[in-house]
Length: 325
Image 1 (spheres, rainbow, N blue to C red):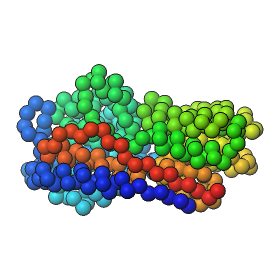
Image 2 (image 1 turned 180 degrees about the vertical axis):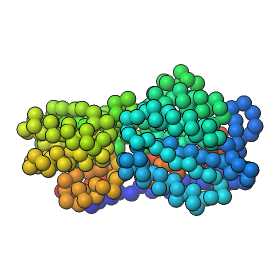
Image 3 (image 1 turned 90 degrees about the horizontal axis):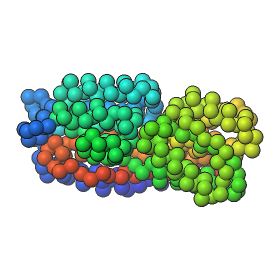
């Protein structure tokens, strides 16, 4: 297995941490005034909420573990609340979680939104209550943010670029004209849209024929049924390009049941795909370093709470992880 690790995280983390330290760790609260609140206890430590998507997805379980490990090593700086949804598609549950975090008096919400538009009103209400909002993983829709009057710095990967690179890795193993299918994520999620576009970019550039595409809504079971139908309907299908690893796992089971040799790509590099990479059932996935994403969002929040200006949107690294040829 070839795993090209980027050095970008080291420099990125160093800048954020240095900024936070330079501003002083002792008073991690924002100045009093309209829209500002310390969200802390008597000791002045801010309480930060990490609101994720489905914890049934290993990617977000890894994200939560990374955040908890970071807080354990910085317990004097902040308190952490982690939570997530039961289902990838239950946006109303994530809205409820946002409201609960505001009620608990958090100083900041670091959120991986389940939907790029639907959660914006709840986040706007949180910001109006004085809660800082940091957007990670899946970018909130810029137009909806502007309409709501909400500023939420984004810390996360270039999903289109990562998916394009994964698609290219598969395309290199195919001849022009080969038939491929795409299993997309949730179509109202910005990262789902961008990954689908990246996979399409790669297929089009290589002259491959996209004969089917459908949303698996990020879920393994849905993707399994979709992949099985695609394989049945397209006897010459040469590859299935999936927008995340959960869906790739479902597609892998369908491919195995079919008894055919069909190339497969994923995205996220969750632990469960390691055996598939090792034996070639999965050609490639993309590591967006889920264990670091929340940490970068938390560090950005701490710097702002300590008095720094809100940072510009920040692109974090993505690395290809390729399997057995």
